[in-house]
Every structure is written in C-alpha cells, then in structure tokens.
Image (cartoon, rainbow, N blue to C red; front, side):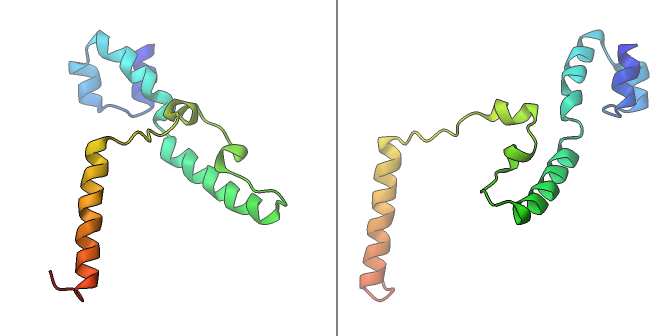
Amino acid sequence: MLRVLVFGYRMVGYEYFMDKMQPYEVETMIEAIPYADRPTWEQTRLKIFSTASMFSKNALSVTDIMRFKWDEEQGEPQTDITQTDIDRLKKQAKLFETTLTNDGRL
C-alpha cells in the first residue's frame, strides 16, 4: 500500500519503483510527500497575497495568507558575523575608498 502511495505521487520512476526500491527508502519518500507540490503551493500563495494586499488596509505578509509546514522549519536566519568577515569587509571598503579618491586609479 505504501509503495503505491509513493508511486502515485510520481516521486520515482516506475522501473525503479518496481525493481530497485528497497524497503528502507519508503519512509524517506513518504516524508517527502508534503513537499512534492511545494512550488505550486508557493505560487498559489503569492497570487492570493498579491490580490489580498491590494484590498487590505493593513500590511500583510505571505504567511498571513497561508501557513505551510516548511515555513516553521526555516527558523530565524543566521546573522552571526565573525571577526574574519569584519576584517575582510574592512579591507574591501578601504580598497573602494582608495579607488574612489584616486579617480578610479589604484
């Protein structure tokens, strides 16, 4: 039954499904089913968001329109910056400053 469900979502080719798929692969495939149509759902959400934002008096975000499982999984973006990054950016800024003060000549 499970293999029919996975094959029904067209996540694997028929030959692989019938001849090569191992039992341990089924669980991974089933976990991926909610993400199989992700691009379609994202497109739908953006279409609804663009329409709803025209008629809303409040500022909306796409997650106000529809929430999906993958929205919570992304979490907060990592904003840590290392001293190495700071030093590299300072050198690059100094190079830009030198270039601009010398009329583009190094």
